[in-house]
Image (cartoon, rainbow, N blue to C red; front, top):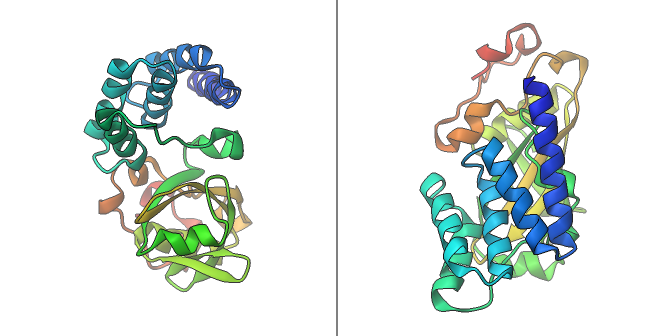
Length: 235
């Protein structure tokens, strides 16, 4: 039953994204409301619903959606920017959904994760043609990962999640990277597992606790027997 529920939610999310991409905001609003009834406090859905309300000129409900997001995730860039625009009565900032493969907007449990990377200057990135929907490459950088466009290094991520990805790449896993948005001092990306090696068949790339608290994650540095331990034993 749980697998069926997740499948239904993913189908609804794809439909909501498709309707938004086609500017069918009323349908997108209704679909996102249905999703929230199934998956309460889902940040991506709340943001999509808020954007739908903005497009429908319903600023009161749009404001409620973005404030709810910020209660759950105080540093959420999309909610912050759109809420600021609503308060200033300026045009909204949105993700250009039509430029992104909808599959990369959906966080598949255990297989993908959204990360916000702080950067010093976004102009350099934007000048390289990197924007919402851009496909980037992940390369192993010892205990960290590098984000590249072609041979140009965009950013180095050296937190505990990056160390986990680095170790799993060493064991044969492969990942894709899609840009979800670029702001003044940060870039938001989605990292998704695309293939596993025989050594990592029992290892989940992104356990749920990584998504719930990015600042308290850790990783098992000893990977010699990584393929032999239970998933729950990997920090």
